Image (cartoon, rainbow, N blue to C red):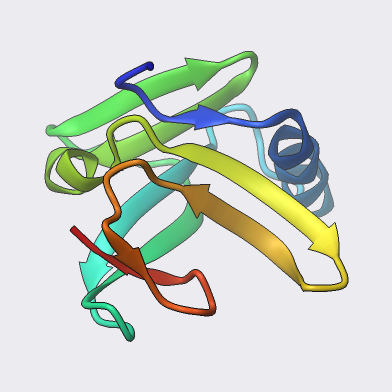
Length: 111
């Protein structure tokens, strides 16, 4: 298993679509992080950004750059970012091997 953060083909397509719709240039990337809160104690955060911080970790998946701060990476190592467009919900999902417990909505977890 990779210790980085990866992204599926479906999520890659959605990232490209969103970046194109918002007319984001090539200096933008996907920023993933973890913050306190949610049903299970920690919640995922995903956004587009173009400013790097000194402790950022970078993972290149094809032409999609994923950036994560060092503290969040401790919780996200080995995580795969996916996108679901089905009847059970639509949006980005984190498939996190470090999560010992997740809430029903999939937006928060515990380690």
